[in-house]
Amino acid sequence: MAGMLHVHFNDRDFRHVQLARTADPLWEAILGLHVAYTPAPRLPARLRPWHRRARHRLRQHDLRRTCRFVNGIAPADATYFPDFLTPVESEDGITAALRTLRSTPATRLAREIRLAARHRPLPPWTRRLAAGDRTVLADLADALHHVHNRLIAPDWSEIEATVAADRTRQLEALEAGMPAVLATLEPFTWTDPVLSAPYPVNSTLHLHGRGIRLIPSYFCHTKPVAIADPGLPPVVVHPVRRHPTPPRATHPAPHHDTALAALLGTSRARVLTALTGTTPPPTTGGIATRLRMPASSVSGHLTVLRRAGLAESERAGPHVVHRLTARGRHLLDG
Image (spheres, rainbow, N blue to C red):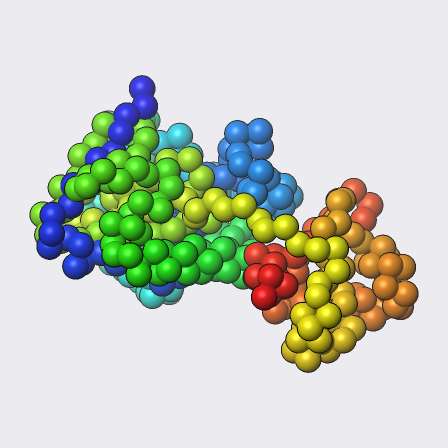
């Protein structure tokens, strides 16, 4: 039965709210894995293209095996998965996060594995982990690194750009005070002094002056996720805010064309602009025909745009199609 999460603030807590600077690699690895194993019809439209790419990547046997290993301890339908999988050091990058994970004390491993086992049956190897087996812990850290590198990292530019846009909106709201920021969080409602959202179970979190770390997530798409252990620094991961895409003219204004050309070069700016407002997404040949450019030139420009995180490409049947990333859209939106 679904419940509610209630986060209680006091005056001191407002001075200790932290807004994550960027996407968190371990949270995104675990939540991205959840998205990959969720049927596409249950996902929001914005995640379905990524879901298709993820399912294609999971055809690789070694990646599929690794994802199943991680999914054994942190499945998509879990009411709880161990907090040690997402250490706060993850804000400093995947290397720092995995270093901390590998050094998790045996007492904490045992406590959190026992708690997870109360919610669902766990695979047999977790018993060795609960007993403090460092080899199994190292294997789990390596598996998370593999999931991040092979499943998540190919789209990291778009993930970072989307989370950065959400942080920008939070900072804009901050001009009206922290309660205004809390009121923008989805799917939360803010009724001073309580922040509430749908949650798998009923849970109440009293901050007691410790503040809270708020982490927007590209892959979190239904309910927020909170650190369960009341003894750990409070953390809540929430979906990036949904916002309507502003209407864009078929052709950008002339001064905008000029600015893009100065930044990217005329031909590359034309290729980037050609990725807007096209359904279905264009192929290399389609862009070449539309712009009257050699296909080889278009292909070269697309390679540069992908490396810059402005465009992405994926196979669709016999063709490779191209789209703007969130970063590319932000650039074109000026």
